[in-house]
Image (cartoon, rainbow, N blue to C red):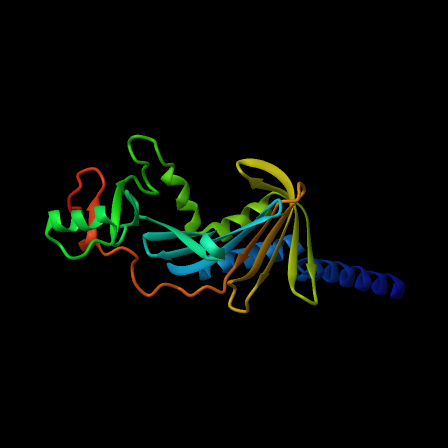
Length: 243
């Protein structure tokens, strides 16, 4: 009888230990990563910026992304004359896109005189990131992704992951699997680390064919919208734009 009581107690203890163990088991690495991705989404700002470095098979192409609520600035940095760096800037809103109005050219001076104005900053084109321009010259809708592209990168990599590992020392997550590159799924490794507040600290991708991409978050966030609608000329009409 005494032996049966001991056996019953031990059996009960094992059941309780098993149940508690299941309830308090540490989450898997994938589950931990998904929690961090949710935090990154929650902390992503409406006004912010980041830099993209694409190592396109030996040629590094830097691009800077700035966003201020519903306006997006896409700035591609390209080599200029004598080793200088030129900025090719495009601004996108839901239904319009803009390029800088040329300064101090014969044509721009004539336009200012014709319209009897002292200042024009931007040329407006019909079509933005919510609707392409009607003639199909520019696929402006593709630029919508840049508002939150780093978030999409890590979410997509995690959903298609074959393996997830964590470097405890550097606190860097390595996600191996498939990644989209130029609308084609390719094998790649995505490496990401997070700040204490949940935002993304570092992000990079290495593709099996040698292509590499880095996201840097050391840029300065904008303090005002990029386009002042008072100083815009409409490309189609040649007149000051109406909004």
